[in-house]
Image (cartoon, rainbow, N blue to C red; front, side, top):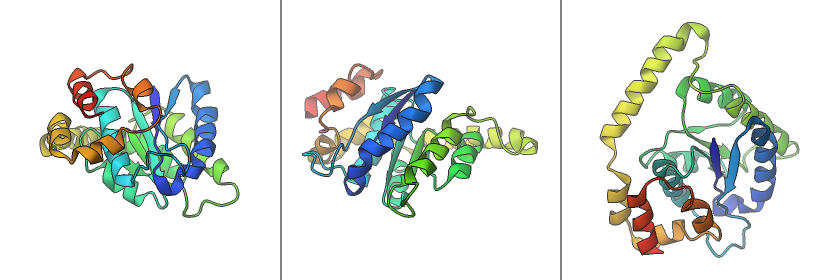
Length: 211
């Protein structure tokens, strides 16, 4: 699985800590991590949590990433923004139990984490435990055991509903303010990470024309 990390501007200073913690947990599982930044609070490309939502959609819809880890101060704004765009099923993960149950019950592809609220001493240990529970036990297996069948059925229903209630991403990209989209994909390493892994040439073409 290719996991993308995205940080918005208020928590950009924690990017290195989050990246190190994520890689330490998931790389031994065989996963790959791509760091889309922000890399520091001083980055030229200043991502808002709304742009994190669009970037998550671009990465997941195009196949450039299989999963996205993002967040903001509380995680709430990032979660709302991510779920505003097609191709993203984002959960708000506050603790390791959230990580396990979101993976098993909801089987999403994006996690929004609070990187400021209740993030003090031992914050990286809490993060490591969330990542372990999120990625360490598979996805969509259901929990508890007696709820597996209805939960898996509900997930399929949700996926079907989302396919019908969102416009296609290329259509959305063309309708958004070009400067907003350019700012979203303006990260220092976006091009070198995204284009080699993108599986949707239509999306790639739109973004190349904007860059």
